Length: 372
Ligand code: NAP
Ligand code: GDD
Image (cartoon, rainbow, N blue to C red; front, side, top):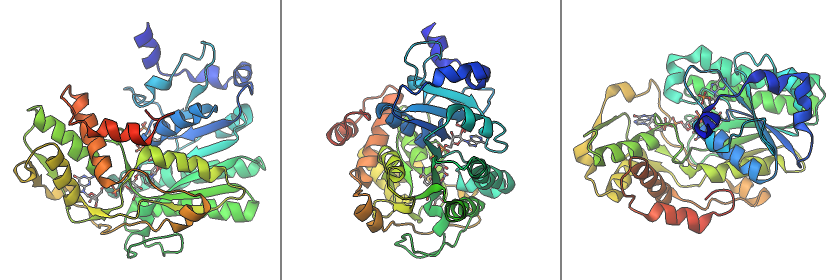
């Protein structure tokens, strides 16, 4: 029964029917609506907000297979007592029920994380990517505008928007997008700014540089590498095929980045903030360090396949987060090598192998409370 309950997908009807409004009584301090709750960031953010005492409402899209694995540990049957997480079926390409949801649940904060977030996929599916990422944002902001809403709105903007602008990048750096994904995110970025300025909405952009974790999707390069390492160790595969090893990214740790999303909405005024570590490493460095940590010779196991090269590549991203450091008093705790250790250990553990061991210690030394 327990297994059934945690895996059971939510029923949309009881959550949005008028009778259900009783369910959302304001016993808790605040109520948040999160798009993209099933993703890496959405799942950590939901965890963090629940820890903070929020009632959390997440939008999930219909899928014939379960897409809720990252939030199963948070989900309770809505008929139980003290349920603080509610899920609603919705799709960013239509957002049919967004007006209804705003009226029913009256969120204090909206975190718009739902996106087709894979840069390479965006070259294959540009119109879909724009529909989700650009128009999805616009659909929510239009709904907020029409409700003359006091809701605080967070837009998940991306360092990918900087494209070919030389590093380091900050809030003043020119955007030079190099992928359909980046263009779609720029649309959302500027719509957020425009609705803030035109309609006085509390709408902020977090311009986040790459952030990773054991919950990172397996087709993003960091997780592809760490999960391959575990599979090589387990004897399941012998090689992993990658694309461009020379590009450089500013990799941070996702749980820290969801904390700062919340902080951005706790400011007195809406604003845009760059969030990153200020340290840029190449994909090759990630490969070398991760394989080395696991005691493997990367040159025996890594090969390149042209299919993973993109039509256009962002060569280097590196954050200048001085505004966030000053205004939000924010500084990253977890750095490149620690992220690699956390991820390699988690992937080894998930295959029943013995972790090297430092990953767990790093989390325990730097977190507590909501992220254990
Ligand atoms: P992710 O793991 O790919 O999660 C994306 C989320 O969006 C998932 O919940 C996904 O649902 C949902 N989604 C996708 N298409 C949808 C649709 N048509 N309708 C409804 N939901 C849809 O991404 P992430 O790494 O957590 O990133 C969160 C946000 O931050 C994204 O907007 C991303 O573009 C942005 N961002 C990420 C980074 C980073 O380094 N992680 C950096 C800057 C900005 P399914 O689970 O059903 O697929
Ligand atoms: N995915 C992938 N797979 N990337 C590879 C591979 C591979 O096999 N081989 C090399 N790479 C290179 C890519 O070409 C890119 O230069 C780098 O690894 C990172 O790729 P991703 O991990 O896919 O991330 P991204 O930087 O393109 O995009 C991520 O970060 C953005 C923020 O800058 C995503 O999370 C975006 O949603 C996010 O906005």
